[in-house]
Image (cartoon, rainbow, N blue to C red; front, side):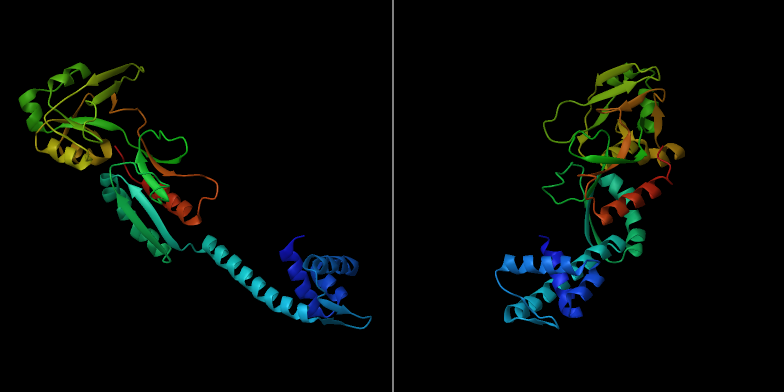
Length: 305
């Protein structure tokens, strides 16, 4: 027995004062209405209606059931309306995590326009260069770069983010520019580390013919922050491997100069994508989907290299 449908049917019987009237309202025959009301009474173990050839009347138990049923149906309708409104006008909190540089330069500037469009939403933007567990931290959406190793996560590509090897003109003037990947080893390489005690940095090169070269590099500065690497490179400290979007303005102005442009380069994998990462396509909340769509549209307008 569908208790909710039967409850609605009972209310229709009382409102119309007859089985036939309720049947017309609900699209049922009087016989079907009678059977369902009888089944309800059998299920409850009490008589709800006094039936005569002329009229229907509520028993004492029927009056109690009517009052409770009306409240329950009203609450359920309000709940349905509230959930439905979220699909039309999303509200509540959206927790977003992003890498620090990417978040400050590209994600944060896009939030005001999104919130202006959806004023009932609140966004909690958490910036860290560590990949946090989405479930443990209650994160709705993470903005990440490179390969998505966790197979339980879904990633929607927002943009391509190739990496470049670069240093300041002053550094190259003193130490000379490498002509091959192997010559990089002779330079002071500024490296990115996710945690203390991590293995020595490995830079990977690939030619347009698909040939790979993996080189272990070293230098006198390492950090877990891409912005710190960029600042160190600008100061002339050494050579850095950085996402093109973090240094494209410096490459245009000449404050940084790129080397080995014929090689695709990275620190671990050759996936240069920027992704919106979330737990599942199933039951993806409207607010999360709308923010992803917003990022896709806005990221698509930008130059990333």
